[in-house]
Image (cartoon, rainbow, N blue to C red; front, top):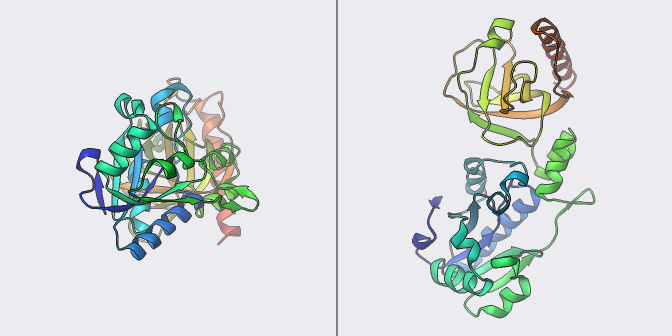
Length: 306
């Protein structure tokens, strides 16, 4: 899959295109990607996705923007898995935000991307002030055809990034997994920490988080990306209130029966079951005892779900 980070250089040939933020690449997004690649094959066009970095809501209101469900790299990897030939990552900035709906159609979709077939969601809005919609798209161009993707419902609930965030925030990992079509996971590179976990008898693989996480608490997890089979363990996601007051989020995973140096490794922490919420303890001895209980409860979970 080719990744283009500049609209003016992408993609170089007519395409079948879909547009969206695709945060989390949930089952609604997956249905769109499947339909995109199906249509692209029928039309003998490369399948292309136009997405944005940062998320428009992060540009307009960074303080109130929702938690991200996936990193850009993880999102691109899922695009590739669904057969996308070209991913265009457009920088969402003041210039792009200022385009009218008509300019977006003419300058971006027709001239720069050479769109011949376009798939969007039924509620797709675009252009300055979000004035463009599906009806405008269909009336504004004769250069490409437009198809609308219907709602994908899972157990009666619309699959959406908002619904996934709500499930994760509530600790309902089963509901989140149903909407995502897979267990929720965080991927990142293992970084050096303050080595406190090791001194307490529970060495952890630390993944610093650049943004507020979509879930917090203590979880039974599987860790992928190391040699051999995925490793079972316990992970903490949050701000470590007993240890730090800086409010910086981090994901820490203690792997059962594992003692290797893995700094710099890119790992994926897959969340299976929430054990409890994050809490502040009066001292490190109390925290250590609680970690021991967390490990015991996680081992019991894995024993029951072998």
